[in-house]
Amino acid sequence: MKTTTTLNTQRVIIVIFWVVLTLTIWSQINRDFPLWPGILQCLIFLLGAFISAHILSDIWLPRALERKKMHLFAFQSVCVVLFQTLYITIVMSFFYWNSVYGTPHDSTDKLAVYAFSWGAFFSAMPAAALINGTACGIRFYQEHNRIQKNHAQLQQAHLEAQLRILQDQINPHLMFNVLNHMHILMQKDVERASVLLIRFSDILRYQLYECNREAVLLEREVKYLKDMVEVERIRWGEELKVDCSWDVTNGKQEIVPLLLSPFVENAFKHVSRMPSEKGFVNLVLTQQEGQLVFMIENSSSVQQPRKDNSHGLGLENVRKRLEILYPQRYILEIEKMDKIFRVTLTLQFIPQPLAS
Image (tube, rainbow, N blue to C red; front, side, top):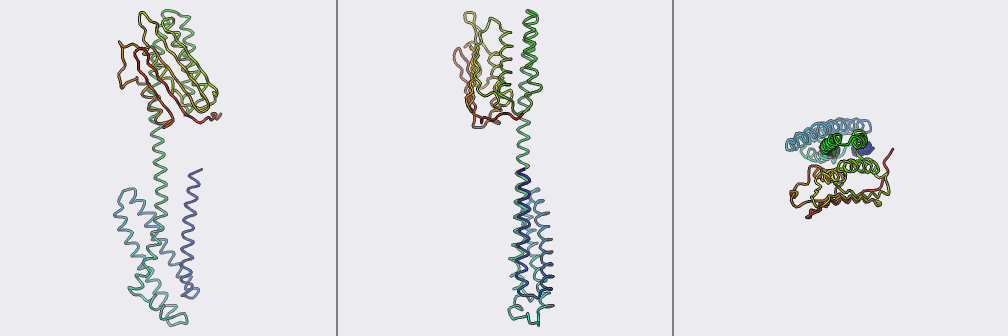
């Protein structure tokens, strides 16, 4: 819609330019020449102006912009202006000597203006420069809009490709972990493995059929996170204490899919269990109006410290996705303490139900 409006505006500007130019030329010619010779002269003027403006603005200017040879275009512009100036001078002189000289329309002032001379040549130069300069200005405006549009499309394509790469990196990593958990559990407890399989099928269905869109319902993303937590809870059993709090006031809010799952995955992946202490994972998700606060923490051990600049592939991918999709609208805090590793994400978004 915006592109069509811009194109129509450009066409209107072009039409206005040629209408104004025609009226300007005719007002000058009609004052100094008889009717029919004046009409013919006006048409010849417009034909020459249209050809020169077309060559300069529609052929040479786009080519110069594409090849980045504006110095050559400047030289071509000077040549076209000089040629059109000579063309205007010849046409005016021709019609003067054939239809005005020695007639009641003639005068000493007209002889000085229209007789072929250097004075007539230089007096026609501003008109030639104005015609071609205006035509090139309009064309440059069109090319600028086209370049901006192409740049925006390329940037959008680049962002989409980058997001797809990041999301594809998350999915196989999560799949590997879950399948590995299921394999181990099936050798110990078939009934629990069956429950785990059902949860895993829900996770797989979400990743294959729902999260390929740009945005999903918050309630679906939360359901996916609950399935992830339940899978981990089943796997760890009594070895790990898991506490979760889900406070969603508007489940129809949109959110980028798989944005929060790496936090959950990394918490369970790096949770620490000491012989004298039971490991834990605490998760709190709170949504209020246009703000979402997600906090997850896990027990950590000083014997297994994390590197200062690395929080796992998933966390780094989330940070990159946030920079692209929620610039200036998020706060990501990663805290490393002696016995706790905590990640807190505060996300600002405009409440908007997902279109069905």
